[in-house]
Structure formats: structure tokens, C-alpha cells
Amino acid sequence: MALSLHLVASKTPAGSGGGSRLLLPQLRRGGITLSSVISLRRRPFWISASSSSDRDSTAVLASLGYSSDNGISGMIDVDAVTEAELKENGFRSTRRTKLVCTIGPATCGLEQLEALASGGMNVARVNMCHGDRGWHREVIRRVRKLNEEKGYAVAVMMDTEGSEIHMGDLPSSSARAEDGDIWTFSVRNFNSPPPDHTISVNYDGFAEDVKVGDELLVDGGMVRFEVIAKIGPDVRCRCTDPGLLLPRANLTFLRDGCLVQERNAMLPTISSKDWLDIDFGIAEGVDFIAISFVKTAEVINHLKSYIAARSHGSDISVIAKIESVDSLKNLEDIIRASDGAMVARGDLGAQIPLEEVPMAQRKIVKLCRKLNRPVIVASQLLESMIEYPTPTRAEVADVSEAVRQRADALMLSGESAMGQHPEKALSVLRNVSLRIEKWWREESKHDAVELPGIASSFSGGVSEEICNSAAKMANNLGADALFVYTKMGHMGSLLSRCRPDCPIFAFTPSVAARRRLNLQWGLIPFRLAYSDDMESNLRRTFSLLRARGMIHSGDLVIAVSDMLQSVQVITVPPEN
Image 1 (tube, one colour):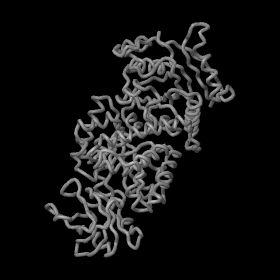
Image 2: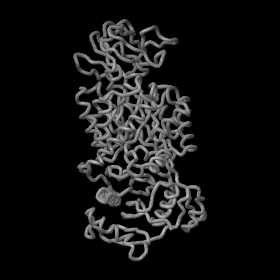
Image 3: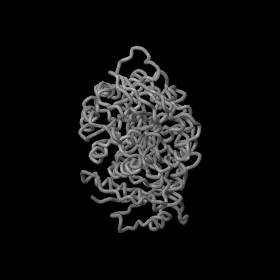
Image 4: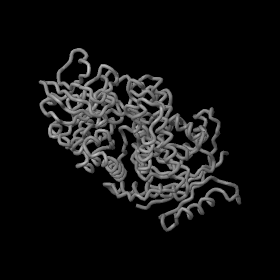
């Protein structure tokens, strides 16, 4: 199949030196020669559209030869935060790393959710470990309302509880265990609040499995206890490492310094409660379902088949949480089967030596990128900001490293769910991401990661090569933006995988695809109905974005689409 690179330029007065003649030297400087392209065609066109932001979109379309009869809408949906950033600072200012916020009591109100959305939240996470389905339903619907009324594209991720051993709810939002305190962990069902210093445990065999002398780790070791006695269904423990106890925190225990996991291995990955929660997520139309403690790829495949049978055509992505030794053993198979992964470092750090967590994170992030799966770095990024208004310098360094590794997204957990400073925590993630990304570009640190071919068909291989070439051209030519027209988001994800220096404008007619793309690195998703005529799409996109002050004459854009197997190099022409 012949690939053609279309050079699209505006008509300029004779002898002006504009248009395509300015681009050819840029192509040569970028390392693009005619020998590297099978055909080079020049298709000049003229755009006549007003830049006034209040001009009626129908009039703009009419000036371009469109009418309501041809089925192409004159509207374009763009995230309000991104639009403001582009207008104020231009293309290069946009943040590439996406931000996920866990929603809890501190952020579940409409005003708080809007504050997070305006602060840069791309994905709202609801954790089924906490609250009931009615509460989560209200949160999801508030997020959808914000999207519809305020122009955001915030996606919703539902996180299942999983079958691992964890604490029950606490009488208050948290409790503090001090050094030497005696606490009781019980499998009894309490009809009323349990006695002081007593915590319920969800696993009936807990008292049977632990032994006196075992070390009990809460939330991956944030608090530690030593088992000192067993009395029927109760296990008495002495606090050896003080800290904050949070509701539904995960429990693991060590014996002679080794993790005890035989009993956990017998528990199903997806519990009966999880299946009910999954049905709830399907009914509410969530964008992502994250599965806790994934052990094998078969679990992911089973769930995806279940979703396909129950969702009646809706496309819900499955995110595998990598947080156990079993997950690491089967890592590549699990990531291949999933639609994305989460590095859940808190629980992972309770199952492997702490000093191995950074290496595991780097390995997971790198593998996800090679396999074209979005990856989220999660757990304890800014843990101190649950209580304090500023993070530790070590936490900032940790966030910086995740951004430098080019993870798709960073996630706040307790910081945004029940912390005292959720908006400040989000601001820290946003500002650190922007600064590290800017530094990376200033240092011209183009990625040296070799991306293997992942396509399973010839047409898929062509799309992959086009996106790889377009991203390379964008870097070499100093392009202001990449445009991709994609119905379901696949070519957008291929461009994101390349981690180009410029932002990627992803245009899709699908509302759901637009939200899902909001998880992926560097993608700015727009909802736009478009035709099969690529050049008409470009003319109309330029007019709509120009009317909103988001592009300007002379900007260099490289465009690809899943309709036309080509790469187009375009300078945004001057207004008529």
C-alpha cells in the first residue's frame, strides 16, 4: 500500500515566499526527503472564516460549504481547562501527564468536583471499598453533569474492592495507632460500633490463620502491629510502628520476615460483591473498571467477555492493578490482556521488598508503553498532604520521577478522597508535571525507547508506521501540534505511545471515546463529527479552533487519521 505525505498550504501572493516554499526547507532540516516518501502532493487551499469568538457556527460552516443537510455538525467540544491554557500560553504549555483523583467525603460535592475538574482532574475514581452504591451513583452523575454543563471531559473509573483481607469501617474517618497501643482485630460482626481500639476484619479465617509472633501490616506497612494473643475470633496486637489507620485498609502479615500468602492465593480475584459492583458500573456507564489483585490474564479475559455480554455495545476499558507477587510473575500476559494498568505501590510494597518497588514501577511503566497500554502510577504520591498543606521534598521527587518515566497518569488516593487539602494536592501534581515536562523538552531529551511492532494485521501495521513517522516528523520539524482524526481512539493511542514533544489534538465523534482518551499521555480529546474528506475536515477544524482562539496563522500542524493512510504537513493559513 502506497503511503502519501500531503503538503497542505495556503494560497499566498506570488513572490511572498510563504506557503509550501517555507515548509520544504523545514522538511529537509527535519530529515524528511522525497526518497523517504512514496509521493509528495501539494494541495493548496484557502480558508475564509471569522476569528470572532461570537460568530455563529452555522455561518462559519456555510462559508466553508457546509450546511445542516450534510450531517456534519458545526460544534466542537473541548475541555474548558485545556482551552484556557492554550489561549493563555500556547501549544507547548499544555500538560501531557494526566491526573486521576479518588473521590471521597472531602470531594464528593458538586462544587468540590468542579474545583478538581478546573484544577486539572482528567479522571474521577470511585473506590467501591468505601460507601454504598447509592453514594457512588450520585458522584458519577455529578461528574456527568459537570461534563455536560461546563464542557469538561472527565472520565469515571470504578475500582473494585477485591478479595484480599482488609479492615472494616471505622467509627470515624480515621484513627491513630500509637507506639505500644493494644488493638484487637476481630472477625465478629458488630451490630453497633465496636469497642474502642477494636477493628473488624472481612476474612472469617483471619484468627485461624495468624500466629502469635506474626507481624501485621496495615495499608502496605503504613502501620505495623505484632500479634501477641489469639482469643477465639479476636486477635490482640501491639502497635510497633505508629501511624494513621484508614477505613478498609488492606491487611497482610509476615512470619519470620516472609509474606504469608497461601490463604490469599485461595481467594478469588473477583468476589461476589465485586460482580455486583461491576454490574452497577456497567449500568452507570463508567469508562474504566479497575480490578484489584489481578493474578492471571484469564481473570481479565473473563471480565472483558462478561462486560461485552452485559454492556450492550458500550465500550468499558479494564484496568489491571499490579499490586501482588502473582501480578509481577504474570506481568506481560496480564498487561496484554488488559486495556491499561495501575502501579498500586502501597500494596505492592507489602508483598515485595521496599527497595524493589522503584524497579518494579519502572518495569511496569516501560512495558505498558511498549504494549501501548496506558499506565497509572498510584499510592502515596503525596501522602503527607492528607494532613499537611505542603508535601515533603521526597514526595515531590517521587512525583517527578514518575513524570520522567513518562507514565500516562498520576493518581491521588487518600489525598483527594479524605484529605484536608485535596485541591492543593492536585495543584502540586499539575505544577510538578508541567515543570518536569518543560525541562525534558528544553533539554531535548527525545526518548530512546525502542518501540516494538504490536500490530496484529497489515492495516494495523500501516497505522502504526504512520503514527511513528508522524511523531518523529513532529519532533524534527518542531511542529506545534499533531492532529489525529480517530473514531474509537486507536490512532490517538499510537501517537501517545510515541511521546512526541508537541501536544496531540485527538478528534473523535464519540463522547465515550473522548473521555477514555483523557487518560492517555499528551492527548487533548475533542468531540467533533467529521466526514471522510480529510481536507474538508482540516478546513473546518481550523475555522472552529481559530474562532475560539486556540490556533493561529503560521502554526505548523501534522495530521493523521484512521480514514486516510497518510501524513499531512500543514501550516495554518492566514485569515481571509
